[in-house]
Image (cartoon, rainbow, N blue to C red; front, side, top):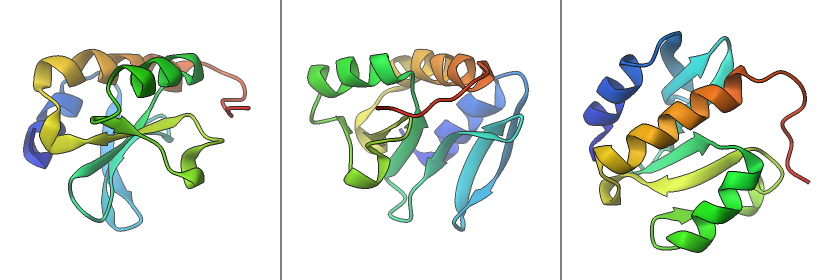
Length: 108
């Protein structure tokens, strides 16, 4: 998947606004970060439900990973060129649902 394709997928989601974060393209729902490209242009920071994150990391360690920086935050890192639209679309829908929930979203 390319960054342009990612932008098109996110534009399809209701309430999602494009902006920037740390100088890179980012998408938010009501000011909550859903996703952003890292500076390398090939790593996607994606909001996930903390319980779902562990499943993703275990299922495809070649595709999903985590750095210490994100360990206590509700995000997973995705290798963008390796994921297909069909794989990413439901994860983006889940990201919107996770961002829409109220309350604290930190991972313990």
